[in-house]
Image (cartoon, rainbow, N blue to C red; front, top):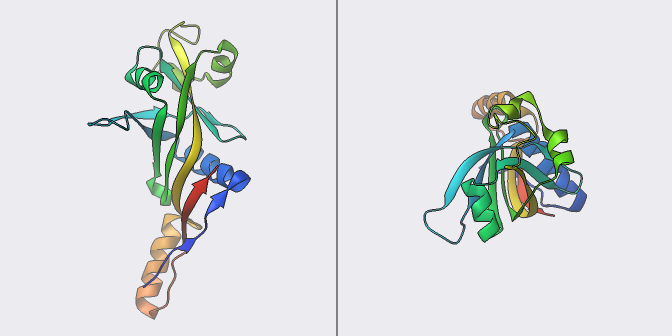
Length: 170
């Protein structure tokens, strides 16, 4: 049986993988209320991932995501870039704050769709997520190469899996 290459990442390598996969997927599913049922899940647009591994989102002060993080900062993020067979699951802590300069830096026409009051809206806040741990799955050469490899493997009987997966510890 074909098995993916295991590569657990820490420190700068882990942050690089988080940045690569989160920015490629762009939209992640943010899960809050981790200790309660049902979990609260919503799509969130990643605004940036910095060199320290923090992931930034914009939200409205009264949104469930903001309320839940203020109650309990435990957050799970899940990203899927199905076109490239790249997946990422992260656990960490969320923090809510407002910094107009950072909002100005993250503002774009894409963001304006969700925040029609504009970047100066006093109800616009930042959610900053700090990755603690996670897991990733990806292919080194993309989905098309993976599918071709599967066909070749089926014909030749040789393993052709170029996928990687592993734990992430930041």
